[in-house]
Length: 445
Image (cartoon, rainbow, N blue to C red; front, side, top):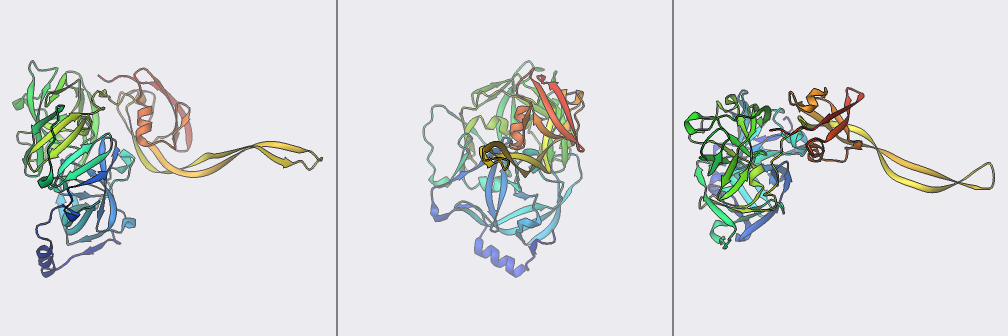
């Protein structure tokens, strides 16, 4: 952190800043009606390119977060942060509070969208870094502060956002669309849906946090007061990371999930352990979260201004809800050297010095390249991968006789979870030794 230029300004300069920029907020330059933004969709997460004080960074669009949070900022990023003070923050997870820097008066730019007076939190602990688990460098998360100033159309298939000036947006007639109230409480947005659990006789209504920063489908909090009970069939699993540490819990299915007239049978659901929620003091009547594994099945119009959200089925709607059948969680961890074939020089002519003839040699040319090491981060206890002896720290080299150094983390994850009953053969590197493993994929639940 030594190379970060932290500018702590006096009261007079801060007062001038506020007089110059007013109360802040995002706007579109030249009073344009909307701005179209291309995003990357990685592991069910929307990743946006946003410039912070002139430096382009990658942010997950997370409707469950208030102020932007930056992490995974290295000295090479050379970002200037203004008007700072140290604080402690806590999020999901059962760990301790973490130290952060609160910074004010920063410039955020997203295409022609800008805010000249944005504050954010910078987490300095290197352990808070989601990039290895999604195989994509991410510097932070942003949500409410951006979304509240626009009406936002999300097209998951085209991987595009349109952010509209609320005063210039016209709702077009749409027979196939359904609109629900979007309850905004503080900086959080909630929708109401219905679930039918296998353990319950009747369908019940649930209040869910709109959470595009969750790559899961649905989280429910076990609570007898609201008739949310644990499932009959489930397995224990690692659910993910929160700002305050790891989150564990149960994975299961609900018999039916209903949202705005759309029904999704056997939707997958996670029930986080109580320890991960113990420091979250805003649960109130909230029953859980609605994540991107469901949201990506719709074209969305998110309207904080008028407190409503519109859903329209897209081509992802009928995708099956799949669970990890191998039991392997992957991550990037460092680089490894790969011998790669870069060309075939078939029929290269060379003179034979022993006579006047010409001999033809078939030659291959190789190069040595650095590629991310795709490492096993966790192995679920009792899973097929666990039963054959695979371990955290094993680096995957091949899947089913295919080298994977040119594949993304998501592609390899699909390869090792493709179809129930399929045999997966891996070659891995374990502390310098190449080992072979094979296991059969088993359907969960």
